[in-house]
Length: 96
Ligand SMILES: [Ca+2]
Ligand SMILES: [Ca+2]
Image 1: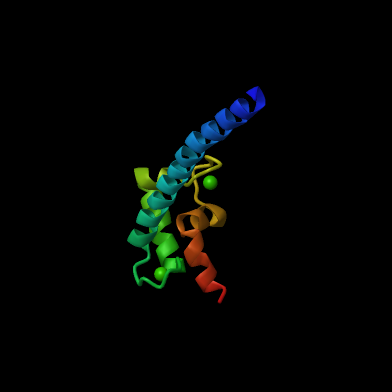
Image 2: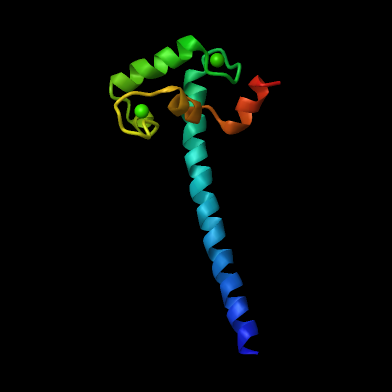
């Protein structure tokens, strides 16, 4: 019976950890949405060239909200990093 108790404990622990991890991820996505909504000026759910330029401009000006997207820390936002600002769910729309 000890095995059953141990298994139950593990399941309980996973149950506690999983929602926390999910919440952290959701929080990160929310930040992306905020930045995306701000820069998607024409609201077509895609970052257009001029909108990316606006992001680059604000990034260079020291926008705190954009610094977190410079994942490799080279002081620039490349296409992959810009793509991270665009919500994953909305990217699919572009491929339609
Ligand atoms: Ca747009
Ligand atoms: Ca970078």
